[in-house]
Image 1: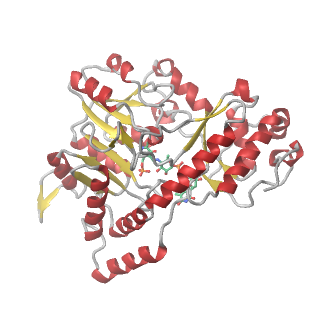
Image 2: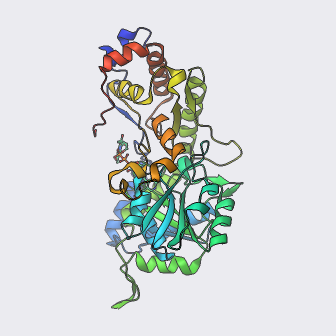
Image 3: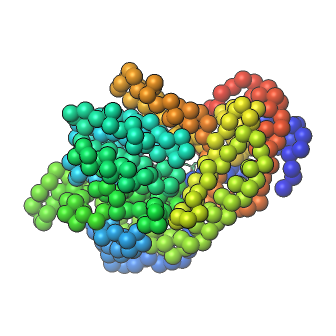
Length: 408
Ligand code: T4K
């Protein structure tokens, strides 16, 4: 690595990018190709491609066992898992949800005609604040969807108490929390159910995929019907349903990656520790810690940029990083409540979400995963340090342009 000591070395000031190829936040973990391809051959040999096939069943049993829950119902993706889970629980009318989450959490509700009522988050955990839920409840409220953001679980007990007091359904969006624990217990068994995402960018992927974890066997069997058009038997439709089934190739990918999950988590943890140590030397850059007493997947390296101490605002730093081919992300800017479909939902919502608005303007996620090597992490830290040493040059190199995200 050639350190960027001088401001002229920065790509935004005319230097060469630190990386010749982009490095990503969500580069997929791939696992053992031969093991995966052998399973794909099996699938082709037995000509059973989808519809509750043997690999899906094996993957469901493995994921349920790893999380210590009775039921795992695999789905075609995490969004469909959320849609089916909230519908199977009987959510309707209004549902309280954090605005600071991936847009799919809100979309899964609105797609079913449910109004998402946005609640603010806690400043440290970035979770929905249980103390703010009471005041959002109306006669139309039927449930709460809380998010285990960054793989750090919510205070499930506090949320179960609020839900119980008001007779509300409670679903956890655990898309980030595969193999994470809360109070030394694996996630999956809280509320009515919890949903996982196995999207390509997740710590364990099934190309596309998701699942619902629950200890409620009756709820699970309803969701199994709903993911398969509601069919109870040949020609016997018991429910209004959809097509939310996971296919066999996806399950084969999941089973293959499960065999390497320890190495994946170790690589994530190593990268996270290197970032944490390296960034601690830089002013105004705070890496969000992970609790050492709990199981974590270290999938995301999340930092907050405090402009008053860093000397540079988050978006300028982000633009400078993209110029270096470091494709950091500002998940979940600007918050669901400021996304177009929800802008006019409630005229008072913006004033109700000060923490969401603050965090959305400071947050930055840095590249990690098995495709990011420790020396890459050192380079990213070096580049951030150089940007913070030369904020005026970075700003003038950007020419006052805000961050323009382009799909790569
Ligand atoms: N709830 C929460 C809290 C979630 O975070 C998510 C998904 C869901 C629910 C819904 O679950 P799914 O329905 O997706 O299963 C990405 C993912 O698409 C999304 O799954 C994830 N959360 C979200 C946090 O991130 P985008 O639009 O930012 O993805 P994209 O295409 O920009 O990819 C991210 C990076 O990964 C890019 O730098 C490119 C790289 N990449 C991506 C893919 C797909 C690759 O290198 N290879 C690839 O194959 O949403």
